[in-house]
Every structure is written in C-alpha cells, then in structure tokens.
Amino acid sequence: MLENEIIPLYFEKNSAGYSPKWIQYIKGSIGDIAPHFTMKRMIDDYIDRFYSKEAARSSRLSADNFAIAKNIAAWKEHIAAAWEGIRVLDVRHSGELAAGVTGEPFRVEVTVDTNGIGRDLGLEMVVYRQQDGQESLARTDEFSVAKVDGNIVTYELKTKIHDAGVFRYGFRLYPKNAELPHRQDFAFTRWI
Image 1 (cartoon, rainbow, N blue to C red):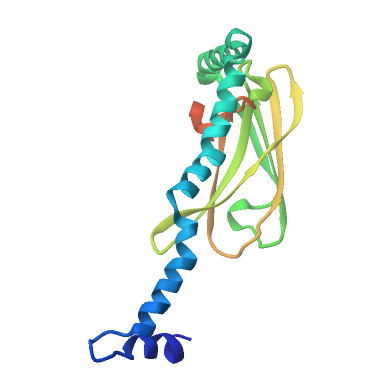
Image 2: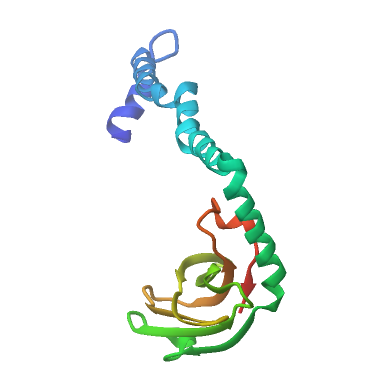
C-alpha cells in the first residue's frame, strides 16, 4: 500500500509544487480520525473511567456519618500497629523452584503468625525476568488461605511455570481490604 498508493500520491505534484490528491487524502484521513480525538470524547472518557466512579465512592464513604471511612481508618490503624509483629514461621515448596521446568506444577506453602491481622493479610508470588539488563514483571500469583489457627495462617499456592527462560521470584505480604480502591492506597509490603 505504501509503495503503490501513498508514496506515488505524495510525489504526484502539480505546477504549484504540491499534490492536490495527497492533500485530499490527508483531509480525508483527518476527517475520519478527528472525531475520535475531540475534547468532548476525552471528557466523556474521564467521566466514565474516573470521575463517576470516584463520585460514587465518595457518596458511599460519606454515607451514615462516614461509617465506611471511619472503619477504613480504624482498620489502617490496626494494621499499622500490628505490622511489625508479623512473623514468617515456615516456607515449604515442592520441587526446586530455582530450576523449575516449564509446564511442571509446583506448590508453595507459607505459614505466618499474622499478629492479629488474620485474613486481612494477603500473600503473593512475584515473578520477574531479566532481559538485556532490564528487569520486567512477568506475573503475580496470589496465594489462597489453606488453614487458619488463631493468629497462625497457612497460605498455599499451586501453579506452573508457563514460559521458558530465566525467572526470579519473591514472595510478599500485603494488607487486604475490599474497601480500598487499590493496594497503593495503603502501601505496606513485607518481602519474605
């Protein structure tokens, strides 16, 4: 298309030094594309993707004399007070994670003294790779809660290595609350 249509159209210049067909082609392209990049479309996108959701969240948080907001604040205080007391008691895994084979399943089990945080503590495996001197996130896999005995929670992950290559991995604990809009809203993390 480029070689047979676009380039010849561009170089088909008249005596004034420009190509009327090229100008018509460009005007047609702008006419087709421009409606997709208007200020109204941009504002509509912001309203749909951000402002409406935040307005609804604000209404929920302020309802009943800010009951949900107060619960979130109390929860954050509880997590912050208990965070340093979290202890990893045991990490077990089947097979050799460092030399895993693509497609082969492996299982990881981590036992944690949550120091009163309980099920509000999440655990995930972070898998990343290094290529050309750059590290990039390959994926994250969330552990499920396998057992709870008071403050002692055992997490379990059953997964497979999906891609070939050299990967690195780590495990991180983080506080979980369905009322948080995203995890960065309360950025506590503990790598294990």
